[in-house]
Length: 369
Image (cartoon, rainbow, N blue to C red; front, side):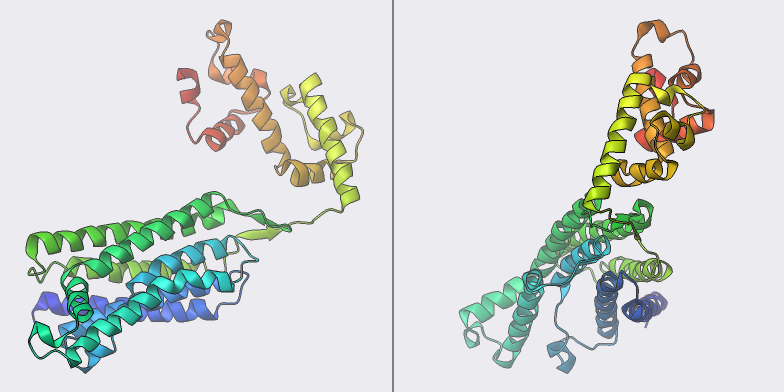
């Protein structure tokens, strides 16, 4: 066996073992994300299975021998697992229900069809007539065309896009508040799997149309990448297996909610009529005095009604005022920072953080625009 083949086999085996180890750890992890961790573990298990199958091929196993009939194709399961991994991670109350099982129908069809196609070898005597019409053409379409890979890739892109959409618009669960920064790694995982799937599908199509599956080295970089992806995916899940994407929040009673909404109306009125946000020394205490309300109730109002921190709420108003000042021609002679101070910002650092948070860009673009 050539040195590069030996190295590739070692990489595939190590990737498969890492997937099995990390998958097992994730499967046993008991947190609020228990179900999501198990979906990720399932992805790792299937990746490991695929890597081990490719390893067997290098040793001459699985190609029309006894192993051939047991190594079923399971490429159509990844999209479903990616989707359920994402939506269960952002929903602590998610449960796998009967209606969800329909999403696993593609892989069931693939496994049954794969077994049916492989079973044709029991009837084939070297002639087309020895097989049924379905058996013959099914074998041709399944084994000689990149059918399974194209459909598998399409399913990953489809379910991956659904997962990305769900991550951008997570559901609001009473009693829980999503910690946005703690789901960024989920987005990276989904995008990585989608991009790999697209590249894998394109390479397979190119391999078929331009090389007629004759270029034996074509799959080496693909499966080497899959091994690395399995290792990275396992490491991502393992390192964040105890990371919680939610914090529990108190759900106020109907009476208390009415009280907090009344306080919120007072705050909004004060900000509109007296522009308290322009006071650089404004604090929860001074605001509480201005509306004659206890400080802890004001703090709770921001958390429950506005769903923002006090500083974020005030700086958001200051930012809107800054945009208003920038729109006036007579203010073109003033520096951006001086206008920011006029809008109520009490420091350059606070101003920079607010602009970056709200626009994703540095403050200098405001003046140019």
